[in-house]
Length: 322
Image (cartoon, rainbow, N blue to C red; front, top):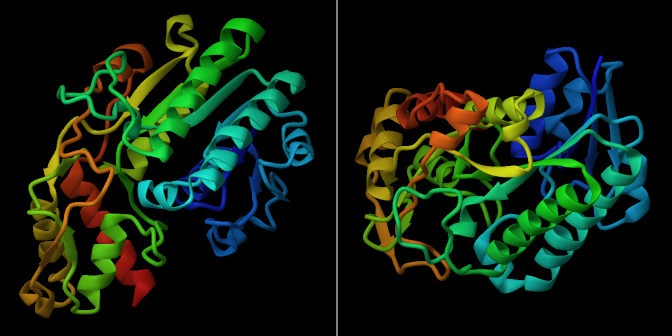
């Protein structure tokens, strides 16, 4: 029975990974300080003998050392997300996303962890205007957050070359799905819009609504983490992969889909108007991933296109937010 560590395991992505791998029979250790994660995301596992919770902080070296004991694989999800948050407070973003990341890498190296898989970000593409985004062509970062995630990739690359620990970075593209928090100043766009629409309040779109994103359902992300962890292809490690669908949706289209699916539960939602505000600082106009590399080296085949994922996400929100 393999033992894996999921940092940030009480968060949106981390808790979904925790649930999935426990159901597959893995021993799972979760390290989380509950800064952005929630106890209710993982409390259903507290009685599972294969589950261990360490309440700690990746900025604390001792917590990292404790968490990696006897672990074969690390799925490093712990981070302070959000471009606006990093613009408001770049120091804390750096402490968590860079210093914390380095603490985890060192602890994993010293404990003899076989493979370190980490959440990278599509923000690394920065001001590159080429579409689709291909892994080896990036631009200059547009936010402190983007800098921190790019530094993660640099550190992982150096650690694989110097110390021999296998690393794989997964550049997440606008992940959404069950358990993504709709509350708080830095809520992601999909749960934020869902909450607004369910309350018959107008969602605010930054700009004209023609900016587009490669929205990626959580089940596709789980698949990529599993493939990254289990691959035996030597060519597939010590690199980074786009973790996406390979299709893009404008914000106007997104709101249209959400209204369509939510109005199946409440027809009044179809009448809710949209408000347009100013463009957001640090935002790139368009994001679209090439997933050819993940398909070729990992055998990745996304199971959920945008509409499939939104339909499932809306159902979850309707059952859990009402």
